[in-house]
Amino acid sequence: MTTDPVQALIDAGAIPSSPFAPDSRYHGIAFGLYQRNAGDPGVAYLLRRFLPQLRDIAVAQEHIVQSGERPDLLAAQVFGDAELYWRIADANAATDPFELTDTLGARIAIPLPPGL
Image 1 (cartoon, rainbow, N blue to C red):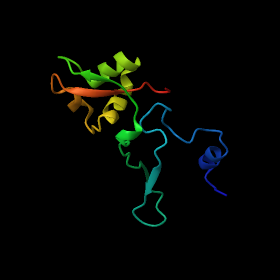
Image 2: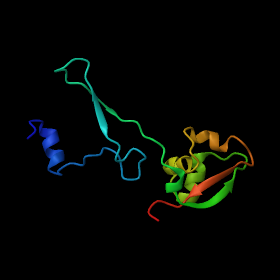
Image 3: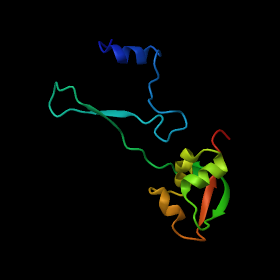
């Protein structure tokens, strides 16, 4: 049994265990605890997020990059939410989403909308 009251509330389901919304790319990513010395309170940090395997992402369509496009604007257009740009980056194995729209005429994969 934990003596940490916050952890006790999390364990009881009284407060959410993830500080990230369900549609966040960080939802479900575990935290680590860095302690310089044993007994130090430590500093919590988010563990590394790995890109999903491309075979696990259902692609809805291919998009040809036009002048002035950005990943967030494209996500707003296709998903109705600019903050879901990371889904397009994941579907193209891009660690830097803005590289996706750097080249005019480039073909990028657009994944199915969330929840489908």
